Length: 393
Image (cartoon, one colour):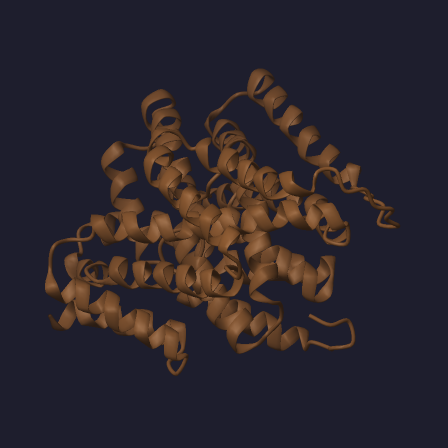
């Protein structure tokens, strides 16, 4: 985005809200929505810049898609707009999932919502495929790019199922491979990195305070809040990765919520647009269903899990913005970008394989992908049509 272009902050936040309404599934599906609305339609940033952010925040602990869209807000209008972007993106889902937790007894006995889930996974896969196609088209320019892309795709298909740490390791490796041919170049740069160390200090300080609260005060509410904050700074990869940790900690160890309630709430979360980390709001409110502050517990729990990751955006973004001006750093970021695009295609392949063997499901994937590529139908409408199709078929 050029410096002289003035962006209406109200319009931008409305577009972020549209992204929130159209974002189902995991981060990879969200990136397809970001590309469709914020890049292709509104041109707030380029596809290359978006892919760099995707790669960068895949390396950073926290909810990667939420961090990416918050960073886009920072890029468009500074820290205040970044904060508002996060609220517009995440808060609706947090409120909805907290309310679901409050009224879960009534909801769990009502089967009318189940058809909504039928074809939403297929639509989410279409967004992942769309992101893979559009990102690949933008960044794969040379033969070397294609070679690195295909190698990382193969490694991703092979290694990612073994550990969540494979993803950040691959991103760094891709950056180093891209940088290697230019390692002997020297340059003088006026771009001095000035990290906001106080932000990092806040993240670490809150972590230490939380651990002291757990040791000295205890209590179910303190344990829940501090657990969510701990997830927020210890998980790399987004909402899907944090679920096993929650089951082990909140269900098996602390016993704050039953496994049946946990899994049922997680299924509902797949039908709610927005970030998957909002599931923490359901766990929070459901864990204190008998208390008169269950809604408050849900909202606090939802915000707690996001807090460290979003604070890290304010620490990382200025570094990214300055580092892009350094010649050698551009080579590294290019490799990270290509690897991120390969991992998105990997996700498109693996998630397509996991879909039910049903010609209607495949038809939803194909039609949704074509509609996204034509850019004639808004992303939220595609999701709405997929949800309605569950009632009709």
